[in-house]
Image 1: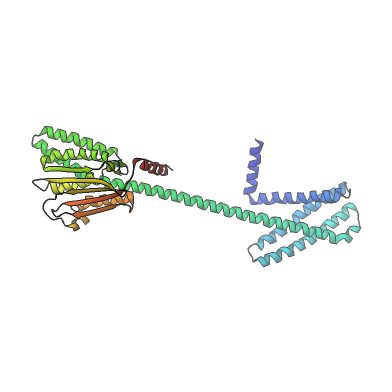
Image 2: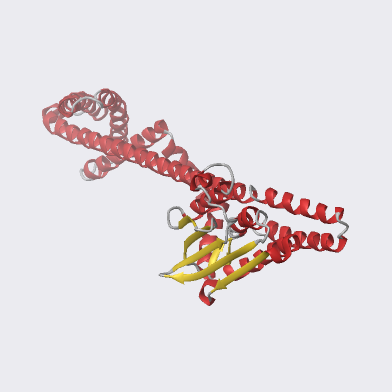
Length: 392
C-alpha cells in the first residue's frame, strides 16, 4: 500500500513541472542547510538556537534569491550560447553578492558578532560556489527533461508509425481478400447460368434422370467452391478431383463430344495451386471449342515440375477457326476469364509467376502457367503468419 502511494506521489511530481521545480528546490536548499550545519555549526561547536536559526533562515533566503536566477535562465534559454554564459555568470555573481549581504547581516543580528563583515570575502566565495552548483543543477535537470521529452516524442512517433503500418497491412490484406474473391466469383455466375440452362433443356426434353444427375453434380461442385476460400492453396491432386466434379456436369451436357487428356506427374500432384484456378480456363474451352464444334474436341492438361517451378499446360483442339490474339486482351470472348485469372495470380504471387497464351494452328488455345513450387508445410507457415497479422 505504501509503495503504491509513493509511486503515485512520484508520478504526480515528475509529470508536473511546477511540483518538480519546488520539490528539487527544497531538496537542494535542505542539502545546503545540512552541509552548513555539519561543516560549520557542529565543527565549530556552535550548537545553539541562534546559529541553528541562521542556518535555516539563510537557506530560506537562498530559495527566494534563486527565483530571479531561474527567471534569468529561462529568459535567455533560447539565445546564443555566449549570451547564456555571460548572463548566467553575471546573474550568479550578482545574486550571490546579495545573498551574502543578507547572510552576514542575519548572522550579525542573530549572534551579536561584529567581526563577521571582515570575513565577507570568504562568505561571498561560498555563496558563489553554492549558486554555481544551483545553476549546474538547474541546467542538468533542464537538459534531462528536454531529453525525456524528445524520447517520449520519438516513442510516440514510433508507436504511431507502427500503428499506421499495421493498419496499412490490415487494409492491404482486406483489399487483397476482397480482390481475390471478386476475381474468383466473377466467373462462377457464368458457369452457373450455363449449367442451369442445360438442366432446363434436359427437363424440357423430358430427360429427368439426366437433369436430376446434373443437379446433384452441380450441388457437389458448388459446395466445394463455397467451402474453399479463393485465397487458399490446395494440392493439385485435390484440385483435379474438384475439376472432375465440374467435368461430370459438362459430360452430362456434351457426352462423347468431350474428350479429356490429363497427364499429371507424381511430383506435380503434391504441388499447391490457388483453389479452382483451372476450372475457368477449361470452361472457356467448353464455351469456345466443345460447344461450337459439332464433333466436339479434346481438352489436354499437362502438369510437371521443372527447375523448382510447377508448370501447367492447358490446351484445346480449337474449333477449326483462327483465334485473334487481340480478342483475348479485351472484355469480350475468351479475354474475360483469362484476364481475371492473370489478375488473381498477380495478387497472390506478385511478379513471381508466368502466364502465357499461344494460339495453335488448329485455332485452339494453349495456356501455360508457371508457379513457384510450394509444399503444404511451407504454405501452413505462411498462412499462420498471415492470419496472425489479420488478428493483430
